[in-house]
Length: 334
Image (cartoon, rainbow, N blue to C red; front, side, top):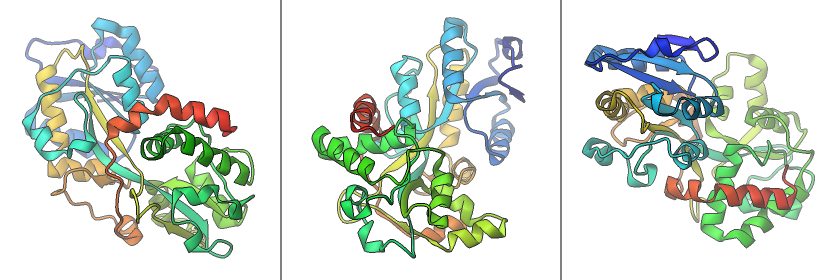
């Protein structure tokens, strides 16, 4: 059952003794998730009641509901947002041999789990930028790119997570130096989303930008001729292949401390780590599964080729979120 956040009421989640239902608060909005949830119900007989909304709205709702919250599971995208739920004390620790054996240790914490990954790549205009000049995140601060860099806001979780990884690898001082170098290279003040940056690169408005891979894949799989034509002008670089590897982020979730249906909640999390569910979960947003045995047939992602991913634990991305924002602010990265 799916209801808009604005009209959903607690009566939807009237709890029953047999716990044959699961109350899911989700910030994911992908068509393939319908099959994901219906298959879980078919396999287990557990009905999923779903509330969808934006991350901050859902987190605020859970906080306001307090001990009486009907929510069992919270699912969202980006390690920063999952870390926020942890910091608010909303998640409960989950001990599951199945989750521990199937999800790599660097992609899980004691109370939330990654179920798909995406990478943050460099996109560049093939007519104006040489590929060899954008092989590392550090290159974005190189003076040779002055006036050529486009970006979304520095306060966006995707950029905060990237900065967190830089802090983890290089320390605060070098991270701030990098941020200031990027600000000096801006074509314009940060605005828009990743898709806007890609299109600006294709149009020649700027020469280079960063983007999550699923935005690239969406455009490569577009049915609009003008978008496919635009992508012919865009090159994709996997950053830091000779060093730390390309920064990756995640979609994931966890069980809430106040979950009324804890057994069903753990069962659902374990289901999300199954090969079948992994395929649905990842392909819903042009991402990669976290379970090595799961397979997704995605021609756009396949076309991007193989790459070395940064194995930095997702805990570290969460650890440096606040410092990342402070550094962006000091550097004038609005």
